[in-house]
Length: 219
Image (cartoon, rainbow, N blue to C red; front, side):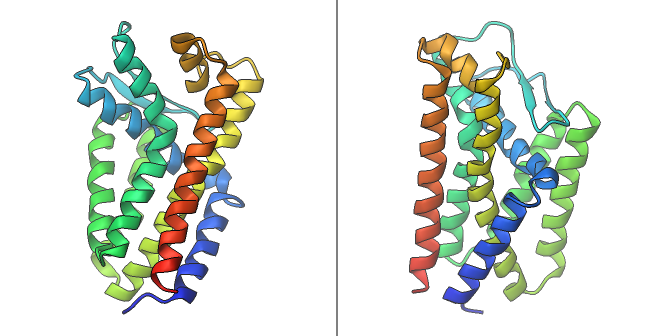
């Protein structure tokens, strides 16, 4: 099935519903991608990952050694809030090249890797639940339905990454000294609100660029 402009718009609406009205339930999937960003760059910098935990309030933590080189700590910390957007943009590229099945199986593979590092029940539920949905679609749905789901999945990642900024905003306005923005403030001496703006601009840019690419492709 050739994707249409109407399908691109309708899946954008579905992605919005998942990322905003249903955020109470779907935020854990975005947090998994967030922590996956930390874990990926931690591994690239040769840091041992002791485990990943998700919290009921929508937060998460990826465990590393107590002492990390400054540059590694900086990049690893920045990678968290950019993780969902990065996966979403990769998904846009695959969709534009008619690789919806690759998108689904790649997402499943990344979740399987993260599952090994999960250390609490909520993390297991979030990863297994998301992975099961993606596996069921990839294994049992016909190609047209997989394509439609793939569009919705990418829209959700891009929109969810931006929606996640609301949680960071309240963390920077509160007393959460363990937020990524607070960590970056300690590392760079730039205020945590500066990093909030950086992350918001980055995730919004990814949403606008990725969304425009999907819509323009079928215009």
